[in-house]
Image (cartoon, rainbow, N blue to C red):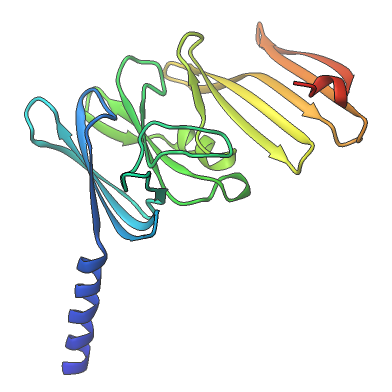
Length: 227
């Protein structure tokens, strides 16, 4: 019993010792954020994480969310970034944005590296105006796991944009619209297939009047990628 108790105390002490806390005040218009993550080694943090949203006006705790693996890098000031989405590069632990274009701020929280090619994966929460809290979005979370990291949002056209690839020479960009009360509707694809070696076949597909319209054109690789 003493051995078990000793192990429990040591383990608890290690957990407390390893916990790392960060404050983010510039990521959201409505919330300050307190992040706690299990461990940080050098400039890399990972493990179980807790995200506390603090209302900027009332200074009270608004909601607490968790991540099984809040994986992120620290900047030169030993702090996490926020709201950065760079394909094949930095993607922040927290992304605040209006993902479903309903006028309310939503939130994506990094949860490991389970997207394409071991890239960043995110749990996505949308703000529910009835419940007055952030709730999980299965559709948007799937996009952030099944592609190359976090998706982009085009607010002018109200579209969500994902990127995916297979090897060096096949890439696809997909765009979705958010249909109220129905969810995501895929409306556009740009496929670039250079697997032949000398040429790249570029295929565009547009969803127009409830049907897909496709166009394909072949280019020499040296001309298509010259920039």
